[in-house]
Amino acid sequence: MIDDIREKFLPRFLASARERLARAARLVAEGDTAAPSIASDLHTIAGEASIMGLHEIAAMARDAERAARVVGGIDDAHILVAVDRLARQLDELAPVRRS
Amino acid sequence: MIALRRKQVLIVDDSALVLDMMRAALDAAGFDVLVANDLAQLDEHRRHHRPDLVLMDVQMPEAFGDDIAMVLRAAREVEAPIYLLSTLDERELERRAADAEIDGFIPKQIGAEAIVARVQAIIGSAGAPG
Image 1 (cartoon, rainbow over the protein chains, first blue to last red):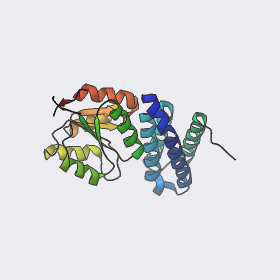
Image 2: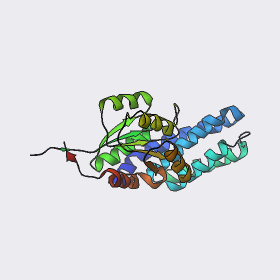
Image 3: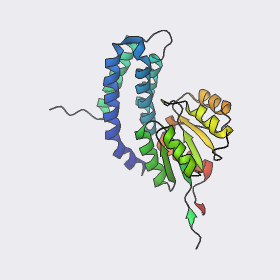
């Protein structure tokens, strides 16, 4: 039963997570002022992936969230690498169809 | 014939996806589920329902879930057990639950299936005579 539920919600999770990661990547350029927004998006991805049972993605999102919450300024390079790794992990789960 | 009331779980979380998936999982396990996406919905449910269990996210845009839970518990506005449901580190969740003087926590990391099992362990799975 839970597998059916997971299957049903997976496309919605993927679409939402990709949108949040794209926004996080854009916001990194804005520097420290954007850190709370980036952390919030990554936190949401971690929570949703956890509920879905996607443990690896959840752990990666939590690591990236921690990088965004570093006191004294965000580590742009670390976050961008983490966001890119997350995006590739999502693609492994379900490749994006490109026309 | 005695009508059985399904045990009712109220989930508070700012993620619509988490709410929808947990509603589906708990509903499939025989629970009646209320969801609140923000404080206004929580207040609405609090005034009109008496859930058997409240699951509360911690990091939400309007307030921290443990702060909300502490207020609800201190004002005796919710008598049901209140558990934090979050991806935060377990030690932090344990501390926040203790500080808020609520009943405990469930890590989101265990996934929907195990969360349903924890809910069953906390309030039981059978309906109570209504």
